[in-house]
Image (cartoon, rainbow, N blue to C red; front, side, top):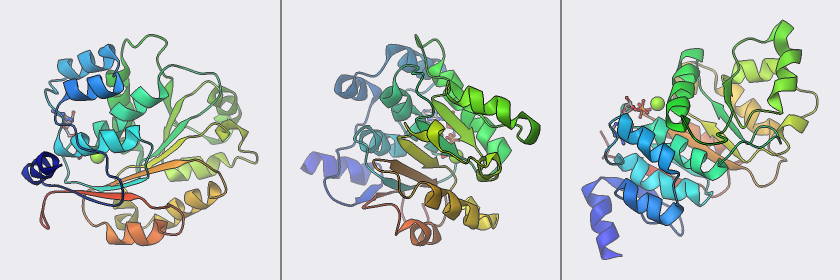
Length: 242
Ligand code: ADP
Ligand code: MG
């Protein structure tokens, strides 16, 4: 316990909440504890990821335990892989049950970057997850509807998701995770209303795990989600000015 505290101090990891799973300072420990797929680890090595960044050290155990998470860490600190890695591991192989993780990015470019990170980490995994980004809607929405059943992880902007205008949410019956990346940007871009609308869409659904990642301010994000996301762990990397 004292050792964990010292490590948290060293890596400037702060967490608020109950029963905080201990941080893991290297990928070997993560593999031992959670049986990480060797292919994913090989891909990380190829990408030059030698050790987890501080946000990854703490977010991986939190996400592996399916806890709700509000995370704050500076730009460039590896937030994408911080949820990408545990989600790939948790969701495992392709299932034909429909979308299990829904990832929201505040712009199409960001959504594409997230897709790329998932694709390279997932590369070569046997019977690997199907990961797609919503690119075009309107006329193609019907085609997309059929495809959705064969997708494990869906990445989209909130607007594109809202525009799909699902009457039934059967494609999302098996949904387990909702991620908002760059959550602070929703306020910067004045699209916080879209985040709220999506949270309300799934409010009645039981057993969802929510993961929110921000780089700057967290307060408005917390305000917006506080009645919907229950008992999140609050993770912060760095000091007041990071
Ligand atoms: P953020 O979302 O926090 O701004 P990104 O997820 O975009 O950061 O990651 C920033 C850069 O760091 C990317 O180029 C990514 O590939 C790289 N990166 C992520 N995790 C690691 C790691 N464990 N070791 C080295 N580089 C990493
Ligand atoms: Mg990011």
